[in-house]
Structures are given as C-alpha cells and as structure tokens.
Image (tube, rainbow over all chains, first blue to last red; front, side, top):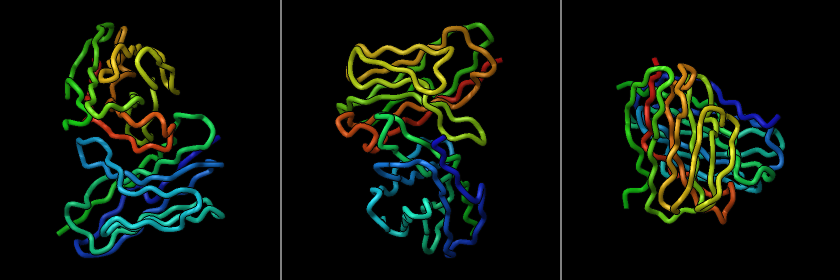
Length: 113
Length: 115
C-alpha cells in the first residue's frame, strides 16, 4: 500500500535555530514529491517540488532533499522565524493512479521567541 | 485573482440535515477536488473532477455527492449529515493536463460540526 509517513509528529524549537523534518514513503514509482506548509486555520501552500531524479531543491530558507534509494525526503529550515510555526505536509504523486496524491500526516512545528 | 474560494468557513449541522459546501476557482483549472482533514490523519480525497461534466470518487466518497456543471464551481453535498462527517473540508484545484504532477491550490477550508 502506498504510504507516506512523517516524523516527528511535532517539534518545538527556538527562533533562529535550524530544524529538519523527515518524510519516508513507500510510493513507487512516483513522478514528484512536494512539501506543503499549512498555517493554522488555513489551506496548505506548496513550498517545494522535486521529481524522482532530483536530489535537492531550495526555496529561501527551506531546502528539501530526496534520496530515492532509501525512499526518504527531508525539509530543512534554516534560521527559523516565528512565522515558520505551521504544519508541514509531505505529498507524493504516484506515477499510476492518475489524479491521486498521497498525503503524509504532517509535522507540527512551533517556533518560540 | 481570488484563487480557490470556499464557503461557508464554519457550519454546525444536526444529524440527518443536508447542506452544500461551495467551492469556486478563478484560475481556469480543469482539476478540482475535495478533501477532508481529520486529526492525526493525512488529507483524504472525497471526490474529484477533471473537467465540466466529469466527476469521480476518491477514497472516502460515502455520504457525499458532487457535480461539475462549470469549470469554476465544484460544490460538495452532504446528503444526510452524520457525526462521523465532522471534519475540516478543503477544496483544491490544479491544471489537469499535468495529471497529479500539478501543484494543488487549496481553499481556506470549511469547518463542519455535526451534532
């Protein structure tokens, strides 16, 4: 069964610190993997996209990596800010299944001043 | 552009009542979908559409109906609300020609409570 698992479930860090969120998936083959940010009470917004052949993609202070051999992706946040407090969701698009997206359960990040 | 607009933002229903969640997008996206988000679970697909007049079921379609008469609108109908349908509902759209490689654009969500 195609699955996407994220860890940790929740994380608390101090402002200015770095952190790394993990995404393990069993979806294979897949066309792309995205990370979304979901602020409390809002809809998710795409942060990064990587195809199966890419290793890393950056978007400002957010850097996503992908290891297709171990089926792992990570999202690294540098110099965290209070506005980074949100849930981060890993989403994998399987090659088969046309319009289906496989969502992880998310990591809830809290950045403290 | 407004993007994806959902109404209402909040709704309380009694068991057995029916209602419609509205979703509209102004990006000319062919693909539109409805998800529900429950604590501790990933977003789950209820129904989706790849164009006007075309709809299909997702993984949790029971108790919900959809229709797509225009490119812009994709309403979700709860036929007879049950407490198990208490959830946050998200409408999302994307360019269908990219199949599931396209970025999903989400609405702000509709929080539904069924008593």
